[in-house]
Length: 571
Image 1: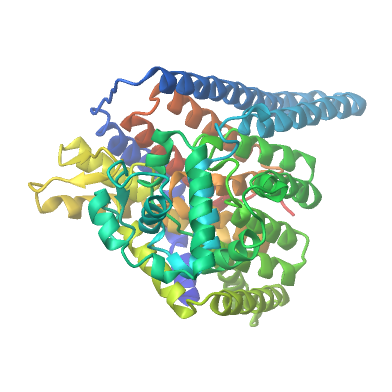
Image 2: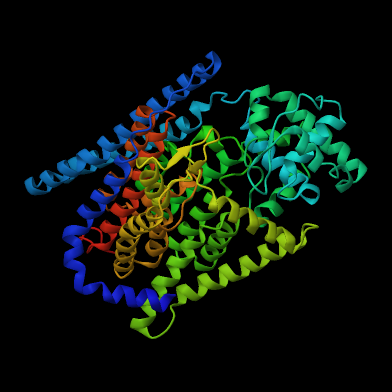
């Protein structure tokens, strides 16, 4: 793979001038044409009063985040012009120092405001104090993984409700079958769950039914039914091993549970402190602003859940360690992040692709790449062994997880963001060959012509191939930590992650130190994401616009990083 990337990098040299002139314009036209074709599907729904109030509060918080992002854009963008003018006029050094101090102070204030706004300024958001659906899946799924595995949580939940007398079998909700993602009636779900009780030891079944009753009593009926219609328990076996070690020791009615569901707040705050340590105050502030004003990885999706941002914390730790040349630790943390959520493995790939280019020049692998490899291999081996032997499922857990990944990869969900979703959704819905189902799935109509998949694949390649060439060019101009960090730009282009994983865009801010244009690109993307969400609130067009921004931002970053760095940015 490395040799192939090197060939691509060398082959792109004769056409670099052509790309510099026409690639940005051409890619923008292709993407805009795709997105505009899908803006003919307005959605509307009659909502109850409680839902209307909740949505009004959510839109109010979005407006606050938009104001913070716009203010940050002014603080970052305006000094770019002022600085250039002062350099020409030879302004006194003391004036420059005061101006810079004021700018950094303003960014720090906005960073704290952005972090606070992510958590709705620390107001209680959810009726029972935490993200109900997520915590149910990740607490119950990990605590009772030995019995329910990846597929049986919902069916066993129904059986527990009936067995304990909490709900009558005739009042049970529909549940989703985790193997097919199709809905099951209560009758068919109970039939499928007829052997659930036998999978538990008697004391474990008593504990399971008590925990199910605890959650059910705290949920509104609508939220409880939505929970059992969701997509279940889906972390990697490594996250599951960590989750089992924690949830098996922390009861639901303990003070430790309250701390556990706030754990992500501590992890994210610690991650920003690490960024300040490794990259400085300005980059730390920009990172907090970019993350805190995030529209699609926000609090309403995964806030106050159960360690849902552990992978992001590990990723930021790895990149900070790499920046500080703590290479073995960097490899270990990047390996941890990869084994928690799979797709962060692309950051390790960036390190070794960059090392492969250097090897062609120096004739040997760099010390940095060898140390990163040692950290990654050792940590990966330890984590794999822990996940393998900490559960009764053993290797079967990895097999079932792989099956779940295949199911989710094949599913065209409304909240996936990336090139694939943008092109697929835009062409199919723009031509009337796909509709949005009641559960948010995109369904292909049976009369779709055979030429459409070919057109979709062609549009995808028209975006992905130039982006990969830009990435190959950028690898020649950056340091190892920049090569790893820049890999974030490939994620929306070569995969199709769900929106709540887009916290990884904070990596763009790590590259923005000393690169004013990248700072502006990052903040403009935050502004546009929020504005798009407000303008097309909870209708199909919101996700078309979100996909477009999710693709344009990485392309802009790749193009900027593939250019020769000006003297101020060189290191």
